[in-house]
Length: 289
Image 1 (cartoon, rainbow, N blue to C red):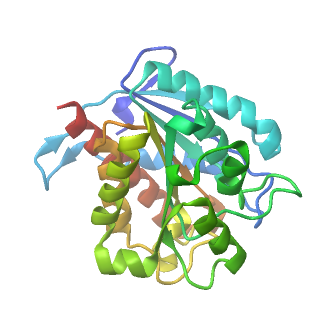
Image 2 (cartoon, rainbow, N blue to C red):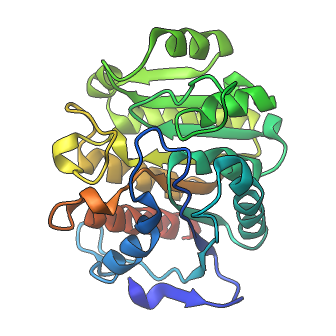
């Protein structure tokens, strides 16, 4: 896929930016290294999908990395928001490579008025820690609710047992978030749930943002995801979700968060992230056709 990347100010249907925010992580690590590691892994991905007979031919404007690695989530808010806003104005799909999950709040703001933006998270965690002690990668959803985002505009998929606190679950229900545990995913399937929530948000929102926290994946399949737990999504389910999101006309931005290359084994998680990009683009190719 390396041949699809375009540097500079060229106009492309898809834009990509690195947002290597690492401060404010509940578990410190090296997730700031992830954007360039993912770009390198993308070079190992082809552009032909043998399962569909489809060639990915979508050029991507690579806006490089934002200078946010040394900034707190609060200080990084403005540059990340403005990057997403600019990409959303000139491209049909913006891809943000984190960095930790604190990037999701400014990314959602980058799509405009929160009352008209939908958020879907694929995440083992609610990300609804209290914001009174500051912004972290553990509270972007709560921060968005505090900012005035309607809870009915938020769907959370893949929540893991023994990885969340009851007060977060209670707060998510009280806000009106759509909530799907891993048991729900196993029972109904990722495609059914994701399509249902995309349809629901399409009815009330102008644009949709999808947050792909890589720790939603089964830990054994994503060793570079420090927050991953046993019993998460399979990589195939993760790729299926990416393809569905890429194909949906109202999905204007997505992010990939919480990949720590320093924990990876034999490039397993890096290749998962690169394949995620490929499936996004395959879905987007189908959208444009």
